[in-house]
Image: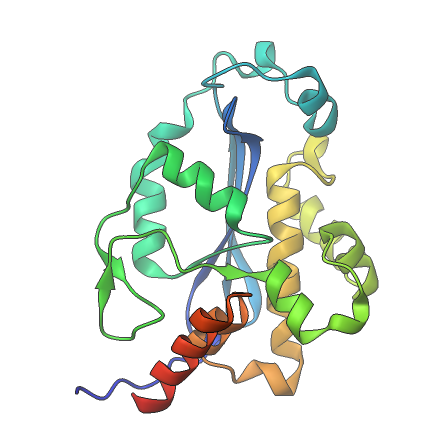
Length: 228
């Protein structure tokens, strides 16, 4: 079996994603933040044309309405951008099920990309995902919450988040339930793990293992790393 050196997670670009929208409306707004070296890097955000109706209760939450979005390019136009990100590094989200489902609803599979759970191998899948919701539940259970806004407050990151938002987010989208703001919040939770000496040297495989609550999947990832 070829020997593959475990990659420390801070040495690997990770692309933190947040979408506003759902399966009914499609993706209405995207926010993506690159995390590398335990720091926030490049960001990307834009509004997207709905593929279905936007429910009033959803619009009240995220502030996006059909008449504002009607002239925007559809999310499907982002294929090449997302495919390249997946080739460069693993994707991340805060409770990644929503983002994974919306990606798959638009493009069921990316191009063949590195499988960061199996160094040296390839996979045609958007995952496995790094999931800050799962990570914080397992690493910091004493916080007692997985809610994004509450975690940012509990970790003392709100001031830092707002400074990043002032730098990167459109003025009217510097709030929770705006895609880039939420992506920055999650990316900051991820990047801040590098400030903990116990966590700064985890491998990508260990981070992926901690991102799943499925004990069998977690054990399989950990065993794979042990024997490579």
